[in-house]
Length: 237
Image 1 (cartoon, rainbow, N blue to C red):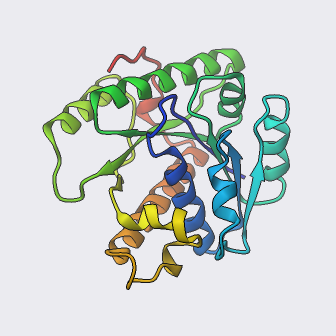
Image 2: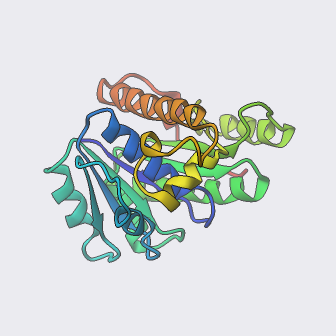
């Protein structure tokens, strides 16, 4: 049962939104999902109190380093997918969760400041790999990008990550009003009212593409296909 951990030491990277979009899309696809809310601000728990949460999506609150591993293990026995939304710091809780991940997704916006913080997350993953003597697959997820324009800064950052063999998801989580709206109205992209929120169909397509790529990556990892991004390198972006 795959455990997907979303981690980035910088606040505002899109970590909680990416977690929620991925969890709800997998649930809409018919999978049972547990979303562990390990962010002290409890964004997922607040969302779950609004109407429209899918019945096959379970929210678990875990904000303690002494319980996070037990919470992940319990969730792994309950649902096929476990997604962990972590706090935006480098803590023992974050390190413990990363050590249990089948895939770590590192959300980052396309700025040099954000990329530097994302590189710190990669360094933390490498440290945990040494601790547990096991590879921890990870991918960069660019968030709040434009679907139409690719700035030179973003292209430069992508090239830097490639240079250090840090793989990025091809799918970006674009800047969409609909992704913000589910925090306000609750539910999923499918339950949003197009009279109140624009470009819902584009957001749905983006969410489907993200979920499909994450599942494909997990399938590749499960089949032990060679992946160049697992080469150990110190990352400086």
